Length: 252
Figure 1 (cartoon, rainbow, N blue to C red):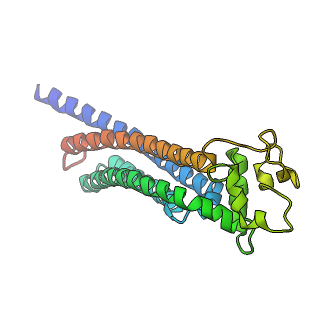
Figure 2: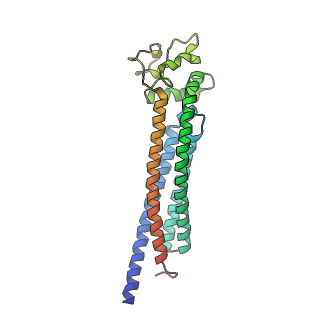
């Protein structure tokens, strides 16, 4: 009976080893996915950063990339600890999982608070930025971002197309446009001379509403990814604790 009990315990430990190894592979893949989202955010949507006076957007992308790298490194440590059956490394791995889990909770709370501040800043500053800096010398990044924003989100002006009437560029004597050409449904040179609804985007709420929806959507994606990884971490911590308790000081 005693021998059977030791054999059963050994089989259970082996199962735990391979379950934890499988978990670490999933964890490693999750880290790669998080890092990829960060790189995509930075590369594809970085134009909008110039429209915000806050570094929140770019900072969040760098945080995602750093988090992905940390998760990947943690996964590698977990694989080494599992395969080598080293209890000391298992403890380090468990502590790392717990720290990442706590950081995710803190980051989630901070992201929600920062979004509220960012939303208020967006409402206050986007209109002024578009009116004062669009097509002005040295503000090429702003001009490019505004054009991309209006075309990609199919909007015109911060709140509506009439916001462009107070634009420094529109008021210039040599300018024949009522709105930028990027407001047009089919952009072409000087198409902004007509601001009729058949020619330009006249969406209620303007670009502010569209940008708010986009940023909130990004936060939802990050939240979903964070919850998924947090669930994986809880499972991993459970497997790690079980394996630690079942491992003997000497290899079986």
